[in-house]
Image (cartoon, rainbow, N blue to C red; front, side, top):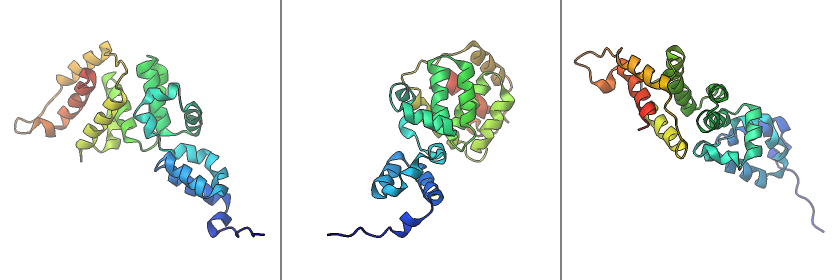
Length: 213
């Protein structure tokens, strides 16, 4: 008759440590969490902690935001309840662009900026800029440290364009009015390349969003 193997040192750790391990793994991918749970069943209980859902990487949903309208509904619900920035980003896109519920959409996009998710900084920032909320939008863009590396913003926009594929992005009248206003305030030095001019930066980003290119 075989004997059970004694628990490993990892299995003997307190559940709080298990939760910490799983929550860090969640930042990598859901697959990483599943692998750990399969390999070390004792850690399954730790995986249902809110901290894990708050850190959960949701690229499968951020890339295709409408997917969670019919699938992954329980995952989305748990992640939203835990305050997961990527979940709020997805919900914000659904509400603001798909359902045309701007108030609810802005609420979730704002919550998405509470973490470190760069695409959320860009999307909430550009929407606020185009709605004429210049101070709010510029403050959010500061989190991207765009003055040191303007390509970060460009990369964010590429990701966001992919996320918005298949969604009708309405051009609101306030977008056009604000874009014209900002264009009139560009004060680049004649000897400065436009791509490096700070006052042109916001106009460029807004124009890409409004014209969706």
